[in-house]
Image 1 (spheres, rainbow, N blue to C red):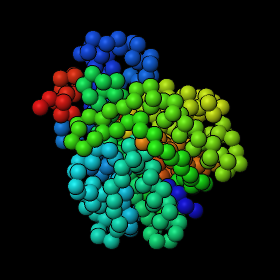
Image 2: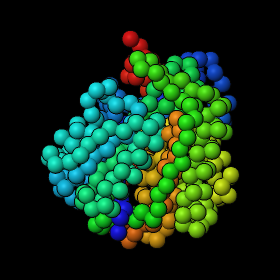
Image 3: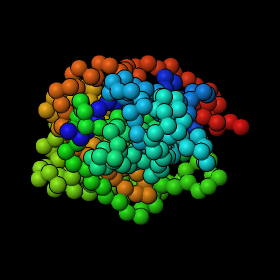
Length: 344
């Protein structure tokens, strides 16, 4: 049975509210909150980066998997905020978790879907029999230019998944992808902050890819999108996933368990994956989950999972998403700007 053997997340404790950011720029916080359906976002501390977030998430996934780290034979870390331009994050993770030396490693980058690309790679290697266990991680410390719309949502956090065939908590039923050259979001070398196509990021970008990937997945399984018990889409804000669900005829309550963007913001490569962890924290054996990521540039990876009986026992072995959401400390914009390197 190919699937998720263990999962874990990590969300920094620091939070900044939409009101706090809006007050600095003289913006209407109420209007922004209604437009984004986001209340606050998670912020990485001075001593936190994508590597430290990934390490914590990986340790939690390994606790649940209950395997020796040396059995991990592939480590893929998806992010658009790797600490080094030249030096892999993946080997830092391998060293920190005690994976030994017999593993293949790579850093992946595809905007907010780099983590799910790592999952697909691990699923393929395990299914082919090349490795026993793989570790796929999506983590980011997202940045938004001061005063830009992104600043209200660009957040920090990540999730990790041990993938294998033994004692899985969620079986993989199918996966597929939909990709195109749609430049809705980009960052040139040496530029500190990303640029985006504003409204262009919605219709020809996010919705086209997410909806198309979902339809492809349903065709492979001969089902309808609303047949799934839980659905997780990439969450750039709170409105986009709900609109995608409406287009696909999915009841909005099926998104509720994974719609974490309202409390933590958009964690980029960790966004759909933390939402997936949140669903696994609450799902019952036999329930089916649709997971659709989205990465600008552009593409979506789609997955269908079925939760197994082991979920009830194993999810108690690692901290839940809700525990991390509730563990928070609010900060001022001044401290936020310092922590995220906006003041030089």
